[in-house]
Every structure is written in structure tokens, then in C-alpha cells.
Amino acid sequence: MQITILGIIWLFFIICFFLANDFKSMLFLLFFSMIFQSTNILIYKGSLGIGPPIITSFSFIIFCVVTRRVKYFISPKNYTSIILLLFILYIFFSSLIRGFDYIQGVYLNFVALLIYSCTFFILDNNPIYINSINKNKIINFICFFSIIIGTIQLLIKAKILPDMSLFQALIYNDTINPNVIYNTKDVVQMYSTFMEPSYYGAFLVGLFYYYLSEWNGNKNIIYLVLIFISIIFTKSTTAYLGLFITFIFFIFSNSQKKSLRIILPLIIFFSLFLSIFYSKLLDQVIFNKFSSSSAKVRSNWNKSAFYAFKDNILFGTGFKNYRASSLLFSIIANLGLMGILMYLSLIYSIIKTKTKSVKKYNYVVKSKMMLFGVVISQFIACPDLDFCVFWFAMYSLALFQSKNRI
Image (cartoon, rainbow, N blue to C red; front, side, top):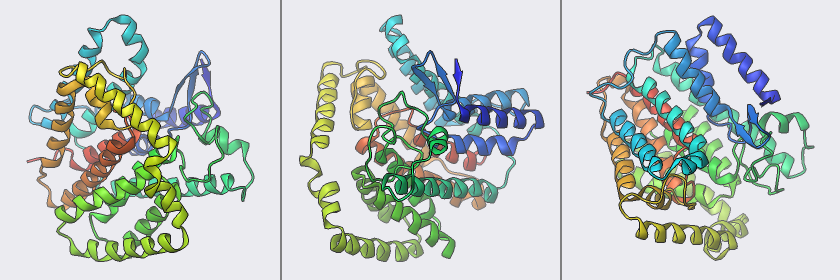
């Protein structure tokens, strides 16, 4: 077992927060960890990396249990948590019937999914004694931090800033995974702390609608503009389509006209700006994307996944057994009709959940819109159920709506 430079720093903070019984700092570290997709804390046998999201979520569970902050693991009235538990159990047993050898191949992904789910259960079923404004500050900091790191990363890849070994050691130390494109490609696209632009794009789309869902004056304009510009620099079809499709749903579901009055001119302005000065970018990312080699490869993945679903309609082929580009195709191929129905039931239960507290209502709506934007992006090109951005949004939702249901 090898520990990285970031791992030493990260585990030091976890131990300090444990000894100080500092719940607020542990909560912040939990959310902060979920954006570090390209770096590891521990490396096992030189080929298996374990990153901050898994380590910190597991540490948070232990911390809450040891400090007796867990009153309920799952409340009998919490339908979202109950459906999620049934979904996890379904994934486990559908993998179990395929034999021990099969489980060995997917155990780390399943363990990650289980740890994230247990963390969600704790956040969603127990009171969090931190006011909503301070909770919101956590999201604000992480948003701003990711954009700063993304800007530095973009400038390095554009050869404007020199490559920094410490920067790579802290943010992109996962040299095992070929999907960490900071270490494998010199593409001038923004992806911040994530493996590739589509993953960062999903995160940005979720954040965009988090801030758009509640109008808060000039402060919201700053965040929205920064996020929108970052989305442009991802040059990601996933981000562009995710932003547009979620906007269509947002228009029909939104009752706050102030939000629409700012976003419509913003989108029109940047659309005109891109069409005039960056027409080649639009051709590359949108208009000619479906004829590109990347699109053809992704299309073939989805076709193979769909054929696998047709042969195993009810229960699928097993968790992580088939690769797809879209989360939808990934679920139907691997978990079958039962799996997709349970997943959609989970999302529906989240959308329909109401809260008692009027003061917290807006924060819950913001978190739901964040989650919805992430899910739309996943349906386009982020196919993993253990995707850290999805669980970041789930944690946010649980944090704001905890113990405030009707």
C-alpha cells in the first residue's frame, strides 16, 4: 500500500478533525472531496487507486457513528432512502448470482456505491445543525475553487503557464488511469479536477441550475457568468447539450421570472458571440460532432449495450458488465428493466419530496435542479452510477432537506 503526497495531507486533516470532534470541517471536507476525480490518496499493489471521494465518505460515516450523530440510518418515512437501499440491494444480488469471480471484478465500484449511499443515508435521515447559509457557502467555495483550478489547468495546456510538478502531484496524480487526460493528452479544454471535460461539464451544468433556481441579485450573476464561461471552455458536447436540455425543463418548471430575465439575454449574447467568433468550435462540438470518430465509438458502445439489454431484458447482464456512453444505456444493459425502473423511481421520489420548512425550501429546490442537471448530463455521456458528481448533488440535497420532509 502506497500513500501519495495528497494522501498524507488529506489524512492529516481527517485525523485532526476527528480528534477535535469538528463536524463542520468534516462536512466541508466531505463535499470538497467529491470533485477530486483525477487523484488518489492510496495506491494498492501499484495498480488500484483509491481517491478522496471514497476515503472521505467512509471517514465521514465512521466519524458520525463514533461521535453518535447517527440517530436513524433510514427513517421509515423516508421513501427516497428506502428506494435507494432497495436499488443497492438489487445491484448486489444481481451481481451475486453471477458468481464470486464476477464480483471480484466489480467489487471496488460496488463498495464505492455502497459507501456513497450510506453517507447519503446519514445526511438524509439525521438533523444537520448548521444553518442553510453556511451550507450554501460550502457549495460556493467549491464552485469557485473548481473554476480557479480549471483556469490554471487550461492555461498550462495552452502553454501560457509552465507545467508544474506539484500541481500534477496534488490534482492529477492518478497516472494509472488512461482516462485522466491531463496526463495523456495536450487538449486545450477546461476540465479542472476531473478526468475529462464531459465530467466537469456535468458538474458545471448542475451548478449552473443550482444558482439559477433562486435569484439572489448580483452575486448570482457572478457565479452564473463564471460557470457559463467555464462551460464554453470545456468544449464538451455533454456540457452544451446538458445545459440546453435542462434549460427546456427549467423554463416549464420555473416560476421565478427574475431568473429567466437574466438567463435568456445571457444565453442569447454568448450564442451570438460563439457563432460570430468561434463558429469552428460550434461545428466541432455540436454540428459536426455526430459524424466524428468519438461519436461513432460512443454510438457503438450504446448499440452494444442495447443489444445486451434485448438479450437480458428483465435483470440485465450484471453491474458494470457492459460499457456504454449514456447512463440510460448503461443501466438497461447492466441492470435490465428492473434496474432502470428502480433508478427512475429514485429520481421521481427525489423530485416529489416536499419540505416542511419554507426557509429551506429554496435551497432544496436549488439542490434538486443541480441533481436534475447532472442526471441529464449523465444520460448524454456520463454512464457511471458511482459518478462522484451525482453523489455530490445527492449529498447537497440531503444536507438541505434533512429532517424537513412533510
